[in-house]
Length: 89
Image (cartoon, rainbow, N blue to C red; front, side):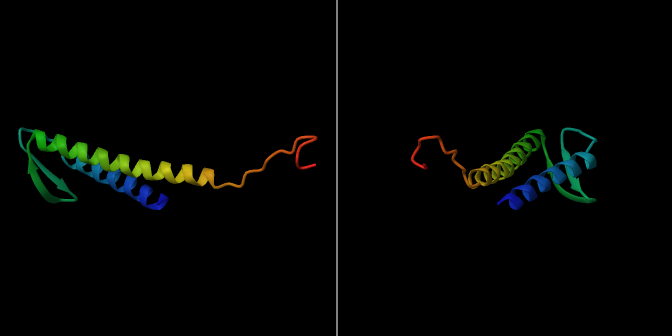
């Protein structure tokens, strides 16, 4: 799950960076292109909604990474200290 979350984070970050770098010119209609290929023509609302979708995917990947890290932290063997006069004596 950790690898899947990290892969999801990297993919969303790379895609967002490529889209921003390739589409710096703006107007009322945006032609979105990645690596020289035109993907779609979007208006401002569509660009905003796609940004929301990318943010949700990024948060899902971040949640997967954080959940895996918390799960690994709980799996460590616990060592209990013995107290003088306690049941371990």
